[in-house]
Amino acid sequence: MSDKRLVYLDNSATTPVDPRVLEEMLPYFQDKFGNAASRNHSFGWVAEDAVDQARERIAKLLGADPREIIFTSGATEGVNLAIKGVANMYRRKGNHIITAKTEHKAVLDTCKALERQGMEVTYLDVNRQGLVDLEELRAAIKDTTILVALMFANNEIGTIQPVKEIAKICAENKTLFFSDATQAVGKVPVNVKDMGIHILAFSGHKIYGPKGVGALYVSRKNPRVKLTAQIDGGGHERGMRSGTLNVPAIVGLGKACELAGEEMEAETVRLQALRDKIDHELLQMEEVVLNGAKESRLPQLTNISFKHVEGEGLMMTFNENIALSSGSACTSASLEPSYVLKALGLGDDLAHSSLRISLGRFTTEEDVDYAIERIRDGVNHMRSLSPIWEMYQEGIDLDSVEWSEH
Image (cartoon, rainbow, N blue to C red; front, side, top):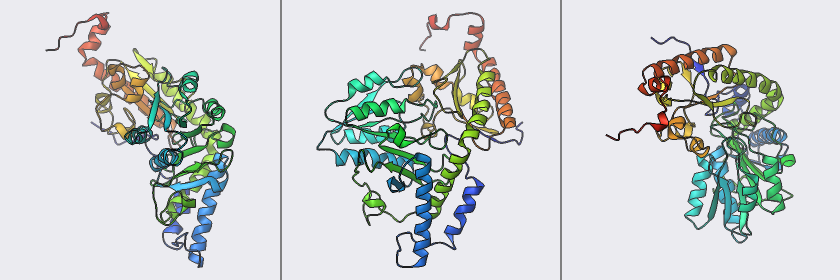
């Protein structure tokens, strides 16, 4: 029988809006409802000032110039604008893009769409930690390469790529570098100038801001990046993204970025300690594997596989009380094993038995202790029903068993 406790550990899918963010947004739904593009009266001026302040807050968090911040509906739109915008604008220079097999579907599907239009795309492999090989990246760059699109941190395993080194290789080859930093912004330090990133996308709802808003950083100098607009009509956002600005959401995004900058250092220490506690407790169980990098990863995320246990079945033992993921939220409708985990070299069995646990600002130690207990109980229960686990316990080499197909 289910108890009434609810624990949310799926913060990589989305986060609740911070009450301080909501409080700052509310006036812009009614009292300050003006259109930021209405520059001939005070209602528009108030809205424009609010947007400008949000742009400054976001730029401060990213180490950018406010004029380099373009507002979007979220990271997926930002990714499309970045990759398609470069492909369209720089087509005379070349038609080759480099990315990785473990990128978010927003990047992979955008690249697939461009391939159908004649673009050439190279998909880099990753190692068992989820890291790209820098020499493979260097070797993949050609005279026709116009963009390297590699994410800052992976949404399923939390692995952080060597962004500075990637940027250096791109600079040496005069190739633009775009990073989907949706999981990284607000969680770890991201400074686009210091790191050499030319274009960067992220979303508000991953950092305790509202859904339906995001930002795209586009470098204005060294190099000056130009993007072909993907949405036309009105020339908003310096001609890169037309459409009436969602002022309340933009205000919320700005406030979320301000809070993230102020609280990131302390939150990193707290969440990393909670994540390490989860790892320590669960990895003491038999036949349990940590997926991705142990060191170079996000402080709030862990991905663990439980051998001889099916992940979806395991989640059914506790998902009335605990929210977490057996893959990324964008692929959870599919019963296929995670393509990210497969790219690490995991077999279908391990990929199917994984849980992604992502902590957040409102996660408590009591939440973590409860989750550890329920997951441990669930694993033991599932294994108690498994003939394969029984064979493993008896010392049978499962790899040598010839399984009948009938």
